[in-house]
Length: 101
Image (cartoon, rainbow, N blue to C red; front, side, top):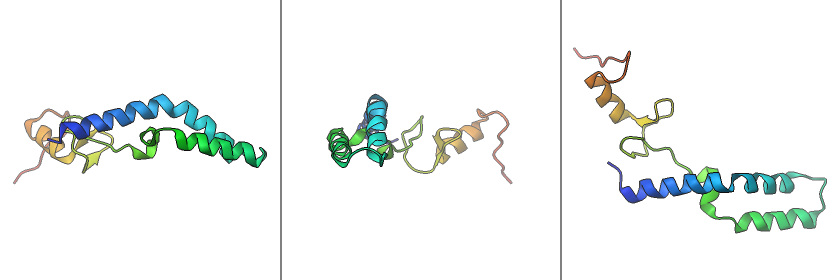
């Protein structure tokens, strides 16, 4: 089980990314537009830098829905390999059988 503080920090990052996504996209469009004057683009860069760091989508990290484990994460199932194996062994995942011999 992951530390509760780390799971909560990740939830806060997800909330910030969603909150600032539109503003961040608008500023990035201004920065990437070569037709605009350099001063306007530079002001957009400064405004982008003033946004919270955790509002950037690159700072998000996938975590297991059940345990909060950050590693060995299956995106399709949204859980870690350990929980996947445990649930498969119990027969709680339809169509998945753990092999044993």
